[in-house]
Structures are given as C-alpha cells and as structure tokens.
Image 1: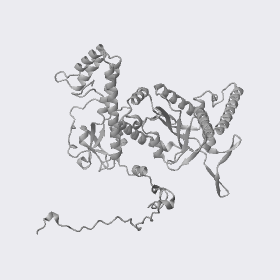
Image 2: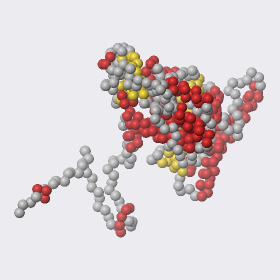
Image 3: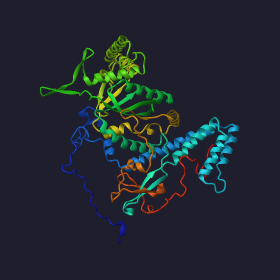
Image 4: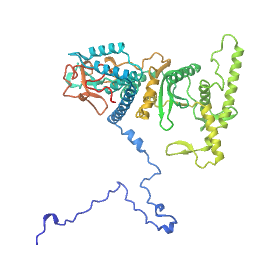
Length: 538
C-alpha cells in the first residue's frame, strides 16, 4: 500500500519560547481555588509583573515622541492638512446650497461661464479678466460667502504643490540642489504654520544674547462661548498694558494661541510670553548654615513662598485689567502734581489686594483634590460628601470669577521656550473636522496680529518673507566647497522633491539638472480654480 506524499506525517519541533536576556523566565504561581480566596476567579492573584519597578521608566507617548522622525512629523501635518481641506470644502458647499434663489442661480451660471479659457489665454491674463468681472458683478449674500470659501479651498489645495529649486553655482553637481516649498499662507494650514514657526524660532534665537533673566509666562482668561475678532483685539491691548505697567519686564516676544474644547464647545484664548526680566525670579530654596530650606517670606500675615507671593501679585494685576470689581491699578510713575492723591490710590489698591489674597486663601480647593500620579495633575476627590461637594463647587465658582491664572517659570531650556512661544497660532487638530469651529475661527482671526515683539525687542522682524538671503531659515544649507554660492533654477512639482533623514528637502537627482524647472507655467498663489474643477456641488 502506497502513501501519497502529502499524507506523510512529519514530526515538527515547536519553536522555543522567547527568553528575556539576562534573566530567567518567571513562572506564575499556582492559582488557588475561588473558595479559598472568597472571591470569583477573575479576582484571583495573578502572576507578578515582569517589570522590576512600579512604573515604566519611559511612557509610550514619550518613547514615540523621542523616536519620531522628520517624515513622521510631516506625515501628521499632511493628514491634518487633508482633514482641514475637506472641512473647508464642506463650508464652501454649504454656503453654495444656501444661495438657492433665482438671482443667485443666474449669477452662479455667469460665474461658471466666465471661468472658461478664451483661446490661448494664459493664467495671469484670465485672472485679471475674472477679477474685473467680479468688480462689475459683485456677489451678495451666500454667493459672496461661497466665493470667499471657494478661494480659500483652492488656496489650501495648492499648498506645497510647487517648489523653488536652488542649485550651487560654486561646486555644481557635487552638492545636491535644495528645494523650498511655495505655501498658501493660510492661517489654519498646518504646513505653512510649521514653516513660519520654524523660521521664527531660528530668527528669535539670534536675540538670546540680549536676555539677562529669561522668563516664560502664560496669560489665560476664562473660556469663551464664541470667538470674535474683538476678543483678539482686547486681549492684545490688555497684554500690552500689563507689560507697560511693570518696569521689571524689559522686552521680549509674545504670541496668541487658541484651543478648542470639544466637550464644552468653548474657546480658550491665551498668550505665551518669552520675556526678559530685570531681576531673577525668587528661588524655591535657600541655603542657611549649609542646610537647604524653602524660601518662605511674611506675606499678608502668613508664611508664603516668595515665588508664590510674586505670582499672586502678577495675577491680581492681570485680573484688574479684566474686572473692575477689585479696582484699577494706578500709574507706576508718580505724576508731577497731586502726589498725595497718587499715594492714596496705591494704598487703596494694596488694600484691595490684601482682601483678594485673604479671599483666595479662604476659597482654596486644594483640600478637595488628590494627586493623580498617572496624569501628573490634581483631580477632585471622589469621596466627598454632599456638603463638601457644595462647598467645593462654591469655591470653584469664586475662583472662575475672581482669578486669572498666570503661569510663571524661569527658562532653563531656551530652545524649548522658543518652541513653546513660537509654535502654531492654534491647534488645528482640536477643531479641524468641525466646519462651524473652522468658520468661526477664520472669521475672528482675519487681520489679527498674533505674534508681536515689545520693549527692547520691539521692531525686530520675526515673520519676514522668504527670499534668497533667508535660505539660512531652512536649516542653514551649505555646499561641499564652503563658498555657498547658489542660484535659482526654477519651479518644480511636488513629485520632484524628496526629504532626507535630517528633514531637509532636496531635488531628486533626475531633475536637478533642469535649467528652468519642471513647471513651465507656475500658478500664482490663490489664483483661482484649476481647469475642469467643479465650482458647486448641489
């Protein structure tokens, strides 16, 4: 009897189990019966963890952040950009559907007809003709909003589709040609925001030698139910007034940042300030007789840390700029006349500050919070009885109405502080998929200045446009021979560039010898709709 080859039984050796390097494999202890433990089998004692410590030395998030490459960061920005592009298109189509009357449909048909190319007309000529037609036939109502968001959609869609190539005239092909993206400069575009932030960080580092006592401050206000342009204007005015009221702040740079709370549907507007103080901040510890102790001072009838006393004073000054319930801060410099009146004003202001400190201590909520080591933050306790819970809510309500938090810390890592101040003006990931939030933010931020220098840094241009003299903003490119003589080649498509492991964009070797680029007719930024693109989808 013959046996088929496929039916032959072979004895296979199972693969060995992995063994930890340097240690023996631990065996789980024998499980006891549920009757012995007095509980169900799901609560029986489990095998001990293989970790020698109670917690991991490095969290997963920290490990991912440390091992993130430049390409990973760029891919995340591209995904946010595509999500924002879809959201802007939804807003555009929503306004297009709203314009459904006969007059709007007639204007829309004429608008579609004017976009058709006439003969051998080039893009700039057609753009001028369309702009002239728009001035003669301006859209109104929802059509005007639809045209506005249409331009923003195509502006975002063209971001980094074209790149400027620069080759090295000194050493030729021995050094690869570099590429610089042509962005859209949209306020919400994550790609352009990252490039602006990177250039601003490099520029602001040139002013680090002027810093004597660098301090990083964060100014906050309560969350806003809706965002308006007036909110940015008021915040910027009161921030400048706060800086002018304190002579100890010599100069620096600030940026306004906006985040969105998905659960409460509110906006959080705050400012990051990198300032140069005249003196250093009070230290938390002092040494006496060779021993280290906390730096306590007599402050409003109690022993308080010197750093906390300074922080509370700044918070009260910031509060008085937003609320008139605690008075108004007098002028710093005494007037030429009425010196006595000026002194009485300061006495009244300091008296109100003493009342505020006493009320702040009385409404402290530290007793109702417990430290959460997992998220490294204080959280409300879960074992509060109804009376304690009502007291906690009462204290929370008073703090929301009578406090304006200021985060104050000395700068030890100057690069990290620069990244914190000059990062994105907003976090697109918070509301990039919400059409209502995107439209509200774009309407509020239009024309608002979000980055500004002051004091000894006033007049320093941070957001300068890119040109050939500013190639150092893109990673300080240098050639092999050291002469660094470069010249512009032309405009290239996005498929003709590639990123190196260091995050620098270079032209591919197959196209770097092109003398005029691969895009013979470069488009003007936000020129208009590409050929064959549907304007409205009803």
